[in-house]
Image (tube, rainbow, N blue to C red):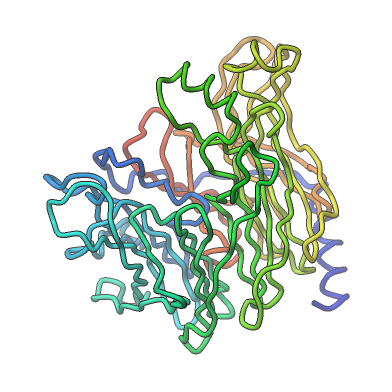
Length: 463
């Protein structure tokens, strides 16, 4: 990027931080309702990717439908929706495959294509449990999206043998919309993720394996599986940030949790890792960078979002909880609970800035932040859309969504409530990571507070 463009973006962002923030809710509606599949997943399971994309005036969404009389785990099928002037229309639904997890979307603005990532089981109908699966990418033409889609089989690395994919895919789909390229990740057990890169000519021209960071400090050293990642692809650079997801690695805590829950397993979710590739077409990934950890007090971390700025800075947001209060009396009685919304800026694999945007300390009034999503405007201003819940200083309970503007260095600017009649408790956005263009409106797909078995859409204009 040129110095003039970078300087211009910094100037616009600095002026914008001084302006009033006025989100206007234009649309709130239910797209579909669903029956829980009781298979450990749900329509928001792939929350690191997105099931919502925008192409011009049209918005597309993928859904998840439970198949009656089919047994878990592969007892769901995907649905494909479009919102036009007439509202939401169900365009297609899978009539052949069965799956467990929702199906992420990606889009190319030219010539207007939407891709749906599916992971159909190879098990026969009626068979319960897990088993092998074969990933496929369906391609819809935006101008005639109700037509049967094309099918693409990702080109994985097959040496020494083809990847042994299962119904637990933990897959991630990311697209460079203007560049008409995409990358797909899919986990293999607890050792690594397979990845396949599709270039602008439609060829799966690069593939490989992303090996997990190594947990040498655990009671039993092991790979640290990284799940629910936010992945961005821009000019063939790939950025990947996710959270540790392994069975409790410390025996003393695992035993204590077993006594509390009666279960032999409990996953950690408390270390945030980042890795990148400067050119995925001609090389693999560098070294893992640990951005945050709550490993000392058995805390909790959840990835939020990732955005690559015009100056190639990588902006990341996430939330943290300081400790597991169930274990505090026995293992860390003097620690205090703390909830944080955090931010980091990285460049070329190095952390340049890290800051806490919001925090709530135990025993003090405040609202707990969660589920941060980044939204970039056409002028490259950057916002965080997030949820808050708790009580204010008067004791009044509050549960709402808010917007916070960030400066180029991550400094928090003005905050404004988003006046949704039905606040969203979990949500996707039409993110640039999925190929959607930066927009003056914020498109949201998710579950409403108090209405968990419906997937809803909201459109917010940012003034």
